[in-house]
Image 1: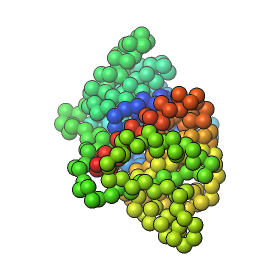
Image 2: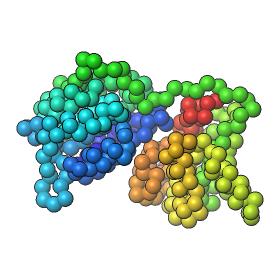
Image 3: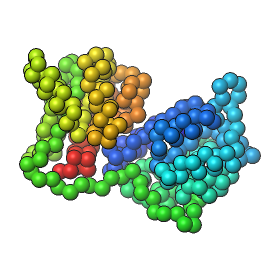
Image 4: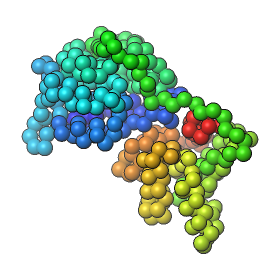
Length: 341
């Protein structure tokens, strides 16, 4: 959550994207957060980790957005009470704001692990800390290990602020269960796992190239790939499409302006896929192949397999091949962890 947009969330996304468990961690952003928005977002998302990026005052207040006029300060006691209401879900809070140790000391009475800043923190140090902290979590580190890596990253960057972040932990804190899911047991060979592949017709060449990189990972595996574009026209096509949408356990989406402009995709396929995600039956894997309004689309909450700001079409051919190779590796990792092969 942030009161004002900054580069921190982009850095976090970049670091997570290259980590071992990137596919099992969902990064959701909320901007221009007002005091009452805290309750709305925590009710809606039920997060395991809450990260605040913004400004703090020397009096130990966080500055949140206001409907009108200047930003509004929120005190430590109020924040502690808010987080107490959601302590069943929240395992850690990171306050990436100046003078936020005061708030951290109040919140740690309710939440097991809280990071606060002992004094002013520079924008670069805040960005380096955040990116390194979540990268470490993405590779399976504990919160303490991730914190130590993040402060070391500040030291390596020679920013002189490695002692500013402070990690507070409750004495009776339980070991955190981070959003890294265990690898399921191997399924019987007779069980087929369904993967839905959605794309605009104009983007079919990208699908062909991706499948070449996926082929070594899928050889001999019980995976069925459903291509929406290859189903036959007529009633049979509709029936097959409905079956694929309702039985799929993962969806690979090749996202472009053509994809987001397709009524068949955005009005029929995508709503069904998102409903399956809400029901915890589906993993969505977007791959941004063309410049598009990804961050304004319903896919914005999902971490793409590549950087949406560097779509494949803008890269050189060697760079495209490398991105497709990395995407195939991430997809295979999700198939192992989510589909159980």
